[in-house]
Length: 407
Image (tube, rainbow, N blue to C red; front, side):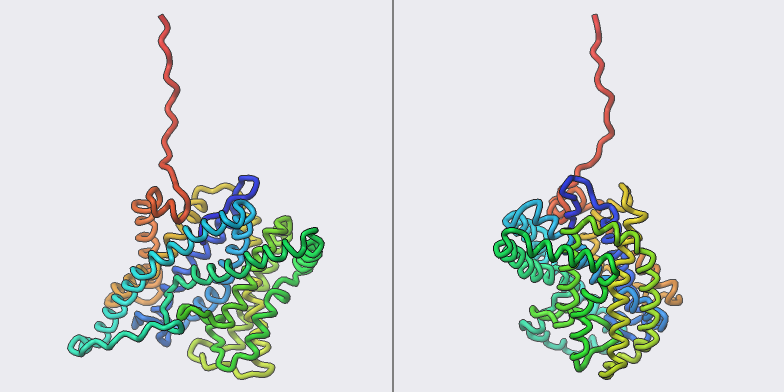
């Protein structure tokens, strides 16, 4: 989510800016929708919840984080090529590790505050009971909150960048990499990306005894060792993004097949929802052919969404746009602060007598308004913005040149 979208030649990948910003805003919709699902599944559970919100959650959750990791891999290689190993390391410490450390405690404190308020509203008698002791913080239970994405990025950098250096050392003549590039081009050309890059996740699902199928890839938001499914899914996505930047000319193939991939994504998502049932049935899908078929639809749909959205963006949004540039610039800040704001809005809307299709948009729009307002007033031109996105300068209208009087 960080802002490295500068091409080697100096131009921007405008379409990928738009994809990243749009996916971030879908995250606000996803987290806001959790309060309005039925049955309840969140810190704040609104009485207006409806099962149809679960379909929205299922679809967004299916592909959103994999899409982020594809973009992360793409721009990680761009940055590595531009700045070298040491420059890459220093930039990632500043823009990924730094915000993770600085924002973790304030975000966790805000989440706990809303959790307490929501619990007291649901059961006022809790106010007269002594508070329960907090669970011990261990390597297995450490609450990363939604900032787990930054932590996972650091892990991927720590694995992929040294591997890249080792490969460059072993393959000094570039022969192995040329073979890999040809194979990658073959995979893209013949629409094999979902099969090839989705295979590790699909295989691992088959041996997970308690996989909650409706939730897809388990969120690695607790503990310093991410779960195996998340590693398989996001490492594959990151590697694809890295390879796609190495073979950036293949973006044209992705662009041409954008609508085809989107059509496949919709069909596969509907198939997965039909095979897997609804949120109320989150007991693990049993093994055998049924699980294999459902997980195939889920994984292929995940990759089809990613390729389709990138392809359509390349077709229609690959040009300068002040709107999408602003969305991309603000995306990192919105990501950092949106979850506490979403929870607060959900809490404040609990007493509003309105259906879920009124409350959900209110929660989303109010969260985005406060996030973007704080970005504009407090972040964009401040030292915080310089850390997150690089320094922005207030634009000034050009003044006409002064004229020199003649005598």
